[in-house]
Length: 535
View 1 (cartoon, rainbow, N blue to C red):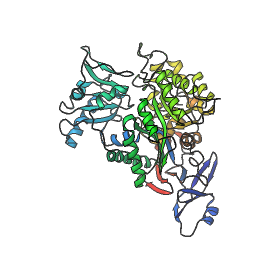
View 2: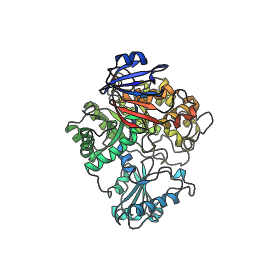
View 3: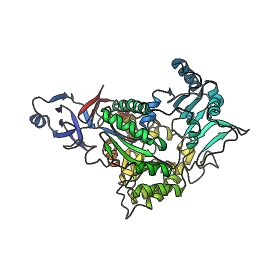
View 4: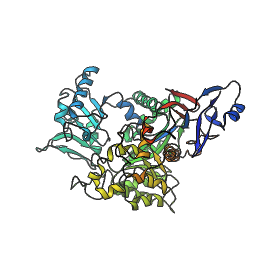
């Protein structure tokens, strides 16, 4: 059955709006005035009166973690926890409310010690021992690059003063050499191994929970990193199960993380490659990590952190390992998207990509995720080899308050250069890295347009030369993200022949005062011509 959406403000492209759109199955058939589209619509079609509301292409989050989001919605909620005392209390309340049996892990994610009002330090095992000494407690920082656990978790994981530090990661020690509960980067796996591995059905449930949450925010496409080395067969099974059941309320382009060559080779041998599609699910790029996060001081820097001399972050892969994985992917026509935050990490990855890119052409669309700490020569290298920039403007909400302390004023002024990147013709896409930040696209667009945090600070915006206008922000979130998945000719615009993935807004994003963009909501979300969410 066809669907007619009439009496709206349909965003076609900059300064071009129409009134109505006709959908035929999962495609857009016609866009135009009410009169011309109604004349083409059959008498028995479904009619949706938009009542003047604005319609944009469905938002496409170019980097997030669906499984972590879904699992986190069923764990201890630590996002924006205001104090260490409150974090401890939430852990206690969760155990009591869910009657968690002794010995079963209690997990949570979202804490940020920079938001604590009662202490100015990282939490440690002794703090989490106040939650329980009978349950292993594991709380992951919001960035995902650090966790803290209690003494019970250390004991169950067999970690003590004799445990060697892992390569490319670290855990912190007390003066006597015993671990204090803080684990950084891949050291987290030493503790997380005690958490029971989810079944395929558990994985599918978590992803479905996250997809429903995404739909409620107007997101119709996600580029999600859920595959992590050894879980790749189970996670692929879960994603394909959801697709085959018809339970996906958003499209998924899966970013597949491997840091062990043998596992990546097995993934390839299984027949997986970029573009392999099963309904609404598609295999995307190899996802690599070169460093950590700015907040955890694990982003890989060329110079010492200004607020912690002697520290330059954590390098997760050697240049040789990185080059080998990139070369293997490129040889097999697999796209690569690499997590890089620090300037040294970005430099390493640009060097690695340059070894496989010929004549400055990047047909596999290799890209860098985050692209935060840069100087102009690094940004120019993106342009030189047509490297994609997957950016998260919402990171400014927190990072603007720490970047000068971490990196110094001069480097901070050339970082988060998202406006400059776009003006240089670099392919820029928007994502949230959810659950690092909430996947709300309107918060993300607000930060891109205003360069303010969600409380409206500072007046005029942080480093305002990097602002973009609202048209650019919407396009980066739709057409820009579609380019990352080779979908720019069928997704990201409201045009005949394109996929019928649309978001109806509760107010006009193109005319509201900039400071009100963050307060917009999705009124309706349409995926493949079907309404999957209505407010």
